[in-house]
Amino acid sequence: MNWHRIRVVCTTDLRQLWQSKDFWVPMLLLGSIFFLFVPLLLLSTINSVGEGATAQRLAQQLDVLPAATQAQIDENLPAGSPPQSRVIYALAVFLLAPIAVVVPLTISAAVGAATIVGERERGTGEFLAHSPASTREIYLGKLIASFIPGYLTTIGGFAIYSVLVNAFLAPRAGRLVFPTGPWWLLILWVLPAFLLLALSLILRISARVRSTAAAQQAAGLVSFPLIILGYTQSTGALFGTNVVQITFVLGGVAWVVAALSLASGMRSVRRSDLLGVANNR
Amino acid sequence: MADQPPPVGDRSQTSAPELVVEIRNASKRFGTVPALSNLTIVAPRGRITVLLGPNGAGKTTAIRLVTGALTPDSGSVRTFGLDPDADGEEVRRRCGVVSAKPALYDRLSGWDNLRYAASLYGLGDDALDRIDDAATRFGIRDALDQQVGGYSTGMKTRLALSRAILADPDLLLFDEPTSGLDPESSQAVLALIRKMTGEGRTVVMCTHLLIEAEGLADQIVVLDTGTDLLTGAQDELVARYWPYPLVRLEAERPLDPGRLATHDAVHTVAPHPAGGLQVELTDRALLAGLVADLVGEGIPLTRVDPHEPTLEELYFAVRRDRSAAEAVAS
Image 1: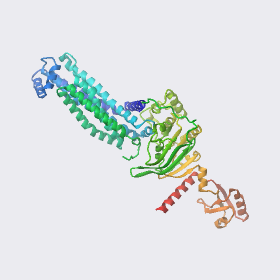
Image 2 (image 1 turned 135 degrees about the vertical axis):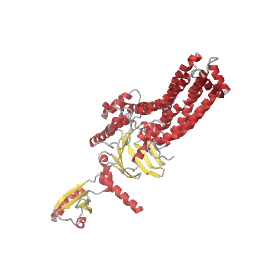
Image 3 (image 1 turned 180 degrees about the horizontal axis):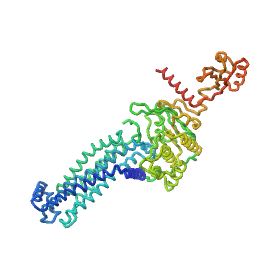
Image 4 (image 1 turned 60 degrees about the vertical axis):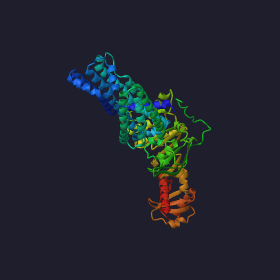
C-alpha cells in the first residue's frame, strides 16, 4: 500500500469539501446547535433560576442517579456546593455531552455516503479507476477524508463546549471541571473507533448503491443504531462505577470491531465500483 | 511499504513486446446484459488503432479492460505483455486515459486537477514543470487557475488531454476524445493525437465518427454488439471487401449490363445507387481499353469515375453483411 497516494486521495477529497460551502455551512450550524446554542440555553436557564426552591427541586431529581454518579458530582465540586451547581454539573457532564456524540457521526456519515457513489455520479470515478491507485488506497484515502471532518468537529465542538461549561462551573468549583477523565477517554479513545466503524460500513454502501441519495438514506440506517449505541454506551460508561476502566474496555472493543470491519471493507470495494456500470455483485 | 512508485516506463526498451494491447476472445456481461462477446483486439506499438462502432458496441468496455478497470468474464487481456488484473499498478502507470466524459473535478481548479493526477502517478520534483508543459501544449495553461466547473467543453477536453500525457505514458487510450467539440477543436485534438504517435506512443481510440477514423487510423477495428467484425488498415479492409477496382459509368442512354459483363476488363456489373452502373474491373489498367471499346461502339459516356470506397462505405457494408448473416442465422 502506498501511503503517499492515500494521503493524496484524502487531501483532494478534503479540498473539494472545503470548496462545498453548501455542505459544510449546514454542518457547522448543526455542530453549533449541539455544542453551543442548546447547552448555552439550558445552562443559562438553570443559572438564572438562582438558589431558591426551583433549584432545590431540580437538585432533588439528581437523587435518581446511581450512587457512583452522585459521588462523582460530589468529588468534582467543593463540599457544600449549592444545588444549582450540582444540577449544572449533572446536565453538562451526563446529559448534554453524550448527545453531542450525534454530531460527528452525522457529519462523517454525510461525507462518507457520497464519497464513492459521488465519484461515479460525476464521472470522476473513471479517472480513479484508470489511475495507478489501488482500490484499498482509494478506500482508505476516502475513509480518512470522511473521518477528519467528523472528528475535527468533535475536537472543536468539545473545546467550545468545555469553555462554555467551565464558564459556568469553574468559578463554583474553583478549577476547570470539563472534560472529566472519562470524557477525555471517550473523545480520544472511544469516539474515533465508533466513527471508523460507521464509516467502514458506509463506504461499502457508497460503493454499491446507484445514487448519492440512496447512499445517504442507507447511511442513515447504519449510523442511527451506531449513534444510539454510542450514546447509550457513553452514558452507561459515565454513570457506572470503575468509569475509566469501563470506558477503556469499551473503546478497545470498538477498535477491534472497527479494525475487522475496515479490513473487510477494503477487500470488498472493487475497481468497477468506481465506474458507471452495472456490476456483477 | 513503498511510498513512491518506481519510475515511468521507458519507450526505448527493445525487449518490450511489439503488441502493446492484446485482448483475445474476451467476453463480459453486466448482469444479464452482454457487453463483450468473444472480442479480439490487438494494438501494435507506435500505431493508432481506432475502435469503430455504434453506441453500445463495447468500445468503452474494451478500453476499461486494457487498464484493468474491468476484468473479462472469460478470455485474456495483456497490456505491455502484463495482466492488468494482476499487475494493474504497473499497467495503469504507463497508460494515459481520456474518457468520453472528461472525468474532471469541477470544484477544483485546473491546476489542482493536474496536481492530483501528478501525485497519483507518483511524479516527483518535476511535476510542476510537467504540468506546465502539458497544459501549454494543449493551450489551457492560462486557464489553470480557474475552477474547472466554469470551463467550456473544449477546455475540459484539453485539460483531460493534458492530464493524460502528464506521466509521459507509453499507451494513450482515448474514448471519443472529440465528443462535444466544435469541428475546429476536433481537428486540433486529432492533429495532436497524430503528433503523439509520431513521438512513439501507442494510441487506442474509440469513436463512432467515421470521418475521424478515416485518415487517422493505422488500424481499424470495427465493433458491433461487443464483437470485432473486421480488423486491419483501411486499405487492406477495402481490398478485402472490394478486391477489384471500382468504376462508375454513366451514359446518355442506359448502359446494357449484360453486354458490359462480357468484356474482358469487367469482373462484375451492378447498378450504382446514385445512377448508372458500378463496374468491378479485373485490372485497373484495362479501364482505358474498356472506355475506348464503349466509345467505339457508339455509346456516349457521360461519366467514367474510378472509385475508391470510403471508410463509410466499408463500415456500412460490414454492418449490412452482419445483419444479413444474423437474419439467416435466425
